[in-house]
Image 1 (cartoon, rainbow, N blue to C red):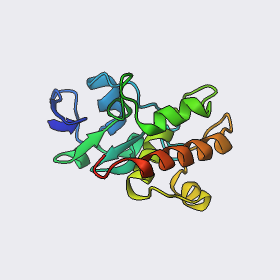
Image 2 (image 1 turned 30 degrees about the vertical axis):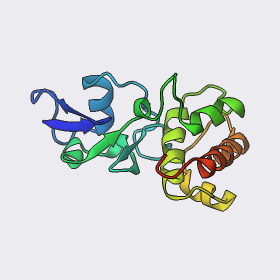
Image 3 (image 1 turned 120 degrees about the vertical axis):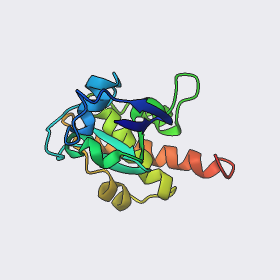
Length: 159
């Protein structure tokens, strides 16, 4: 089976990539992309959030066959050390993570929100970010999302 991950076509070994295998395990175990985390396994916590064709999905319950022919983006594609995404800069500035385990899923959910809404209200943020943070850094998460949104609003069109 072949899937497109972070802009590149990736071949998965047929002997290991069963159609019903959760996307999460293909990403982590078959492709070595360990930024996406396992949390609950039932799509409740959001630690496994990735984008499929630009929409946030919980990869722990997404069958591998359902992403065939679609683009999958993981936290590894959000930004880089040399060119971090505005959310990643805001996460550091606002000291969002404590343990950090849920953060890749939080960032991916927030990136999906800001891709469609560059001026989210707290209600918009609360509706879009249904991920669970055991450390309870929700006020810092909201502040970081607002800061990143502000930076994105100032960015030239097409950026």
